[in-house]
Image (cartoon, rainbow, N blue to C red):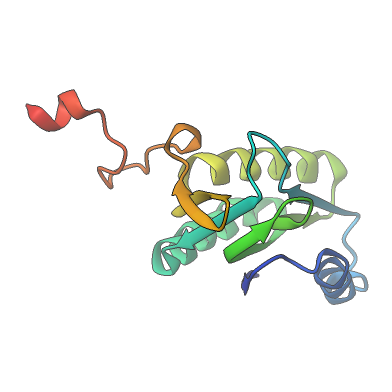
Length: 152
């Protein structure tokens, strides 16, 4: 299940809803990950743009990838502004087996950071400033590509 919200995520409500959805389905593990915006480098928060069609495709490919483990992934992410000390990202995995769930949540979060089509901005003094130094290239998109490669 992929959910997108405007602004900060209501962590307790989202996790409770996911838990209620799976608690009677005989899964042995429910492992969430909650990302919290840190107060660092003088930012007031973060802001996010999302390309939803590619994000949906990426997420659905992950659901297929974990199906052989009888696992299911959940993910919630913010659009727009998210202030410090609130959440912009939650993911969770349910699986019959704890070890598989631990492996999946780690791999999923790492791949999310590297490949999800979500662009991050710092919020500083009421302005959105593209966080290029903390952004990664999106595979195949040409975004953030090395300028030497583009000049060739």
